[in-house]
Length: 302
Image (spheres, helix red, strand yellow):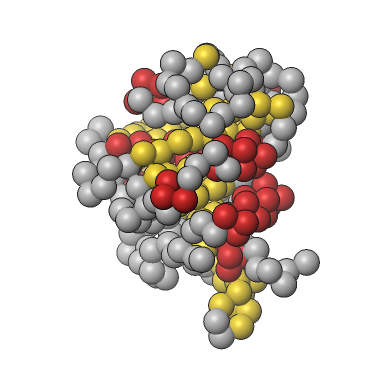
């Protein structure tokens, strides 16, 4: 069972370089931040799963890749959720309105939801949460299928939003999993949280364990309408692919990888992709970051 993202090289001619203006910068626990930028050229073409390459400071030549969490083409803004992990993101965290930041994007191939499988399970781990929010928001505006998304998020840190008990009933969930993301609740989209850090309202375990628990509550007809989308650390994506294979579900994953150029020139982010013709080395930045899960996590892979 497999699914495919958009065709290779569909991104060519769509990447813009612009000086984006900081509109707002919201700060959360554990050095997590949401940066809203006025970047109209990027916002006009951004899709769930794509990312931007941000120059964090004038004296730091290497940019940092960041997934797009929200985008508004009408008003020309994008939201980036990130965590401070080094000198670049630390510099970025100091920005405030109306400062400017150089942004290159949107870059890469995004998720491709299939109308014949309108039941969407979006799984985000840590900084892999943003593409899931973007995916759901874009599904909200589509009318080609009765889209029915569920977002599961996992984190070992406090979540970058104020967790609140969900008002949306969700059969098949363990009793302790009641925490939800307020923004998704406002959209009428169910969400549930998982953590091993004893966070209130969260399922005690990995987010993939929570996904398996819920998926096993579905009948065959419900599973036949379901597709999985995921972004997060490698071990989480491998576990997601294992769950998908166990239940014979299509699954797309967005890989997280260190990047230098982010436009396919350096090939420093290449990964092994299993195809019918054999193993092919493909670049996460432009050939991905979204791949069919089974092509990355093949059965014969150690």
